[in-house]
Image (cartoon, rainbow, N blue to C red; front, side):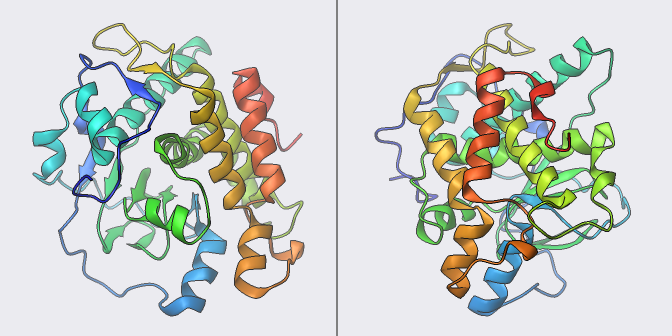
Length: 300
């Protein structure tokens, strides 16, 4: 058992042991107090926040207050190679971030565009973002104000214990890839389509979330073939059917209908913000099968 509480036995996804990890793409704030007031609290507050934000974009636009300094945490010392990514959850997150951004950099370049990398902030409990306080209760989110992703690794336990997902490393990778899908939407100007249409089964908010699921699937298609910028070899050596099954299971587990049924005993499509379990499964699959971002036109 690892110190962060995740077991490695039986995991299928495999990183190139010799590949180097780029920890500059991660701001490790774990163990650093963020200050400010916590958002939500208690079971009702937690569920309400998860319905609104889980795997999403923070509704607070915020202003860019500048990049916070990277903490001298265990990431920088301990996450150096693909072998470390196979052994530790935090190092695996670094490896997934590197792979996702390598893919989108290549995809943007092929379209004559320039991709701007985004950092992921790892924290415990609470930290500050340009969109307001990031807390464990809120869950993973992308903040357009500072163009960073906020993630408490303890939330992977919530994915299994609260939402009933099978878990596994590629379920975790799906969470990260989904958030980087929101960064891609921000760079392409798609995020602006959500303004004023944030709820409902056919809302722009749902379409935005489903497109981020689809983008995660597109990356999954290329994860074992996108060359690492440093070595020229793919950072991820192998994906299996079990890995993709774990990602699909995680996508379905956080569908609005399943969360609402669990939290309140009934489903209200008029308040959906992320889409149903079936929709999230469908759009991740559409991206994975096609391997092409053009297949992710959830707005069309």
